[in-house]
Amino acid sequence: MAKRAQKRPPRSSVVLRWLAVGALVLVGLLYYRPVRTYLERSETLAAREAQVDALAAESAALARQLRYASSEEAVAREARRIGYVKPGERLFIVKGIPGWRAQQRDRATIARGER
Image (cartoon, rainbow, N blue to C red):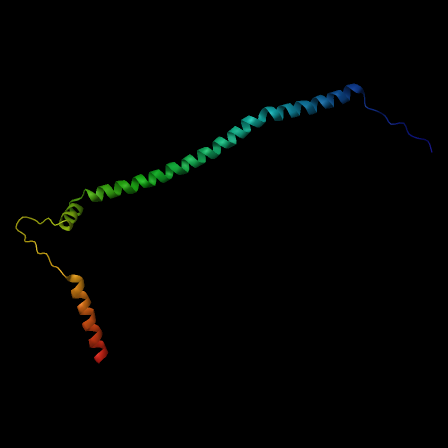
């Protein structure tokens, strides 16, 4: 059997291929950092947008709470809670309510048990 002689491509063709591979590697290296930075920045931006949305919701809730707290109804309710009365009203302080409630519960329990 006769050995076939392998044809080698011309030297200029091999050099051009290696130059093309080198150029692709160089382009890849040059694009790596900007692409990585872009992806990091887009992740940071998404996190900040989520944070802004959460803060906007919190701000809206606080604005609603402020509107309610500054209404006349809320001011009157808080004033009554701390003991203020309107002009012409009398303030009565009732003591011993928890003991009275316990007594009423005991009476109701005894009454149900006697039936």
